[in-house]
Length: 81
Image 1 (cartoon, rainbow, N blue to C red):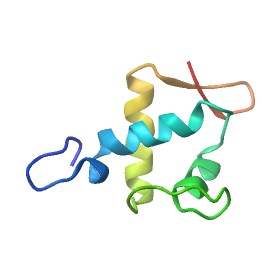
Image 2 (image 1 turned 45 degrees about the vertical axis):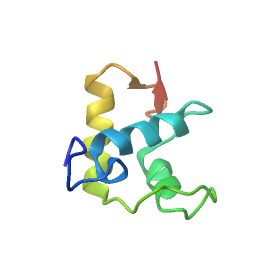
Image 3 (image 1 turned 180 degrees about the horizontal axis):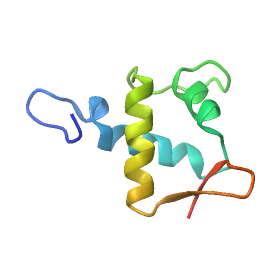
């Protein structure tokens, strides 16, 4: 499920979800709850291309952190590097 394959679309993969999250983090710093709201289309009115679980959100954030693309600021919010 991390990588797309014959039976898993790119939008269902963790790599695709990570890319979507990274594109949303460019403009501002967000908490994990705010990112979850963006992906659930509750607060910001933006559309996530597939419904993902909270577990996949955590995995995607872990992947982005391990790749050195995001980090936490002094306020505990997630920012891009």
